[in-house]
Length: 377
Ligand code: CMC
Image (cartoon, rainbow, N blue to C red):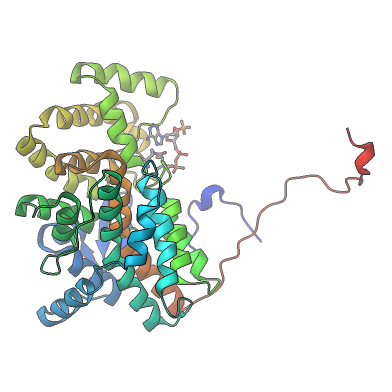
């Protein structure tokens, strides 16, 4: 009766109304709306509202949602104190994972799992996540954290808290497009992790903590940092050909390429490529963008026939670099955005829950005699 699918490839394990992916033609929709339309016209707040409510908000609904989110920007003094005690060498993804877990200590009813409570926790965590990341980054640089500004939107406020000055509209908008494009993506590994944990009726904090842990892997969200490391390793555009060919010859993965679902170019990569090109020009990082384009060309020539094309992480690396973010903040940016998607999935799972419990095929031995400890070799 059972079939084994390594890596659960092709297995449908949940229902969702949030995102839809056509991997053959490279199409992504959130609640039926094409990602390009959202990237061009929407805001991150509007996108999260869409994912959670399965409809675009009216002006009044968006205002109310935005106001509610802004009320959660601040973090408690206890959390700030805790951040100050974190070793300055800690990776921001480890920090974010730990702090999301720690937020449960400040929730009077952390285990409440009805849908209304889960939604309240989700907006609370989403509102605080940028503040946590910015506060840690400033403290590790020997600076004081900057209090959030509730006059600012999600993206503008994050860049303000990180840098201590209001970002330009162009930078804030570019960052917001990154947030929109990363917000949800079907049953990807971290979303699955969140749904698996909440399906035990554990709690929202545990589910999101697990999701952050999953996301940091280099095969998943951690790939954006891998892309930047690769771009830094390649001295100039003239070295790209040899670098890529050597990697492919040794069967090494080129970060930011390939996808379990897409066999065409990831539509998010198209949006982010446009953004990366513009920002690279604006910030004098054209060489970085040109190196990326060259990698893409060689990969299309060499492995395009196998359906290996740029994914979301490929051009997000150049985009984040041009926005001025440090390398180890790239994956936390993905997490800040994906908290919107993870939370929506947690709510969907709680609304129609069944425990995830697949089986493993046993491939070991049977009838092995028990050997007393003194007789073992
Ligand atoms: N570079 C070179 N070859 C690749 C790549 C790549 N990036 N990705 C896949 N392949 C090859 C792989 O070597 C294998 O070849 P062969 O059949 O000859 O052995 C074939 O394609 C299938 O690869 P796979 O690893 O079995 O495919 P998968 O569906 O298990 O993996 C993936 C998908 C995303 C893990 C993989 O493409 C990969 O490791 N990419 C690099 C890491 C990366 O960019 N991850 C971000 C994914 S998108 C955003 C996100 O989800 O966070």
